[in-house]
Image (cartoon, rainbow over all chains, first blue to last red; front, side, top):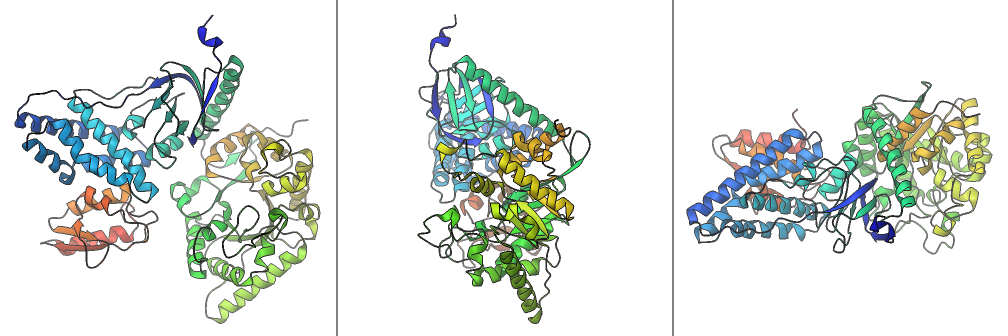
Length: 536
Length: 84
């Protein structure tokens, strides 16, 4: 019997940097050592460094020719540009002229640069320190006459830090990565996410044994050493499901279709322009939910009309005619905003939030409506109101919207009334959806579930209750049926829509429009494609 | 400049590559009074750690200075996109 079977599984926690599951033996990577082959003349050392720099540059150029994604290309071209910059290399050659050996001179030249990035205020620039360390080690390896470290496929790599260029040179099929250093915003984390490589950062790698059997649960941010057979089998199944979903997603292009060929609208949820940069608008059916509260959070001054207008307008431009659904400020509940939400709300989820707050803070709401009315002129904008509970709230919003438009036109601005819809997330609204004068419906499943189940989604002990039940699906079916009957659109934009396991149940309810986090597009598309009609 | 993220790796590489295409000495600063740094050096340009929405100033000296400035301003104005 394998002696490992008798060991007990233990878990090492970290932070997830890229989701996914990997199973396999652990492989500890060692960082390049400062090998110092000695007793060369200054001229010999100079030539040695020059050769190592050029060899490293050629490695990187070669690697850059093989990668296909923009993120990878950006990192490699940054490293190539660094090698070509005399400001980086000249101090090393100066030290060699003073009698230093090549390796030490190179480290002395690049280490201050690394340190300056490590001390940067901005997380992006701090993360660049990893790119420079990678470059330092690559040149050191070349100086020591080593070629690239190779990683066999199917292992879970454990390392102090993963250099981007090593990451890019590795075949990650079925593999995973844990590192002690690095953050979810490091280049490698970005690459890992875009390539579907499970990755966890902040892991204490000291006690990890080379070759130990392990499961990497990068969805939960944990590494499990010596898993028991049952745990291993469970994770194996999950991994198989995930890789199948990824395959379908990778080969998928064009509209989302069920197995019987019925089209399903698939849109994305976003919080700002930054996320749109990497998304091709032709691959999605529009923006189903733009959460404007993120424009308001964490700042000294609330955003003005012009700032909001520019953002909404650019979103509509990005979408190029596809619908862009903007939700008016949904502050309160779990999203407090300084200077706006009511402090000391005893039960914030049942308190002054969403449209309830907007109708009390008309100064803020009017500015947002004006920005939306202006952005509605050129683009295919839709506006939805959160937390609507009774029809009068929506009616009041419509009057305020019309007032804002009249005001703008009076000032000589162009303004237009976009379709005005409502979030359906309060059970009272879902049950009596016929009574509301809404141009469209968007079901907010997160709040709907917690209000229907009377279970907070933030209470881990109630996780089983804060889950979609038949009661929730019935309500969703009711809203969708009413929308269909009355010729309106109904979509669902909560986490439920982005859960591939729930897609079939939602399609069973007649729902044909989903709005999901960009990362869920592939898995949800795949789940839609598997759907062959309501099970009898 | 109106760039969403600031002088990150990708835009900095583009900027230095473009600057190197010209003969002139080209400097870059984050204020009209300097300090000025060599716009052809990736080490120096990245070291400015220019945040988004910051203003970049260029200063060129040489035979093709005018063309260099026009090209650099176009790159920054176009948010570092590829080509026209």
